Length: 176
Image (cartoon, rainbow, N blue to C red; front, side, top):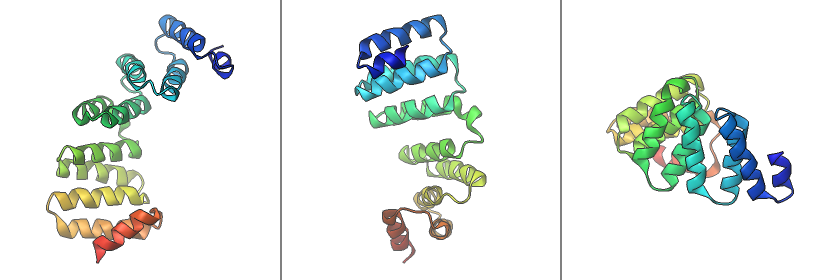
């Protein structure tokens, strides 16, 4: 019903239906996800973050919600809160390379380069063809003062052949 209402432009009514659905079943994932989407479409970031937080309180293993909430927190400038959000769901994300790489990126922002490198390495064990992750690892190693290892990670990134043009040019400059 909420989808139909939103499709007809009745967003407030759709949100009301979603609120009711979550009151009767707080674990209803699709309702929560659709509500977050509606809120973000309206640029209502703070309410979307609250809906995600409530969902994670009931299901801390919902890694996609945790990653989205952490991205929103990061965009709002709260790196520490973004890291805290990610940490809560890390046990459920041990096989999610995107999640682990994002954890590495957050730790780099927190100036924890060696810890960041560890998360990038974990992500790369799951999918070594991800050039972006190799670049993240290289930057983390460089920041930690491990220049030879960083150079090798940049080489690995270049070998993947799947970097964007700008990222490929960046890596080539690093390897000169």
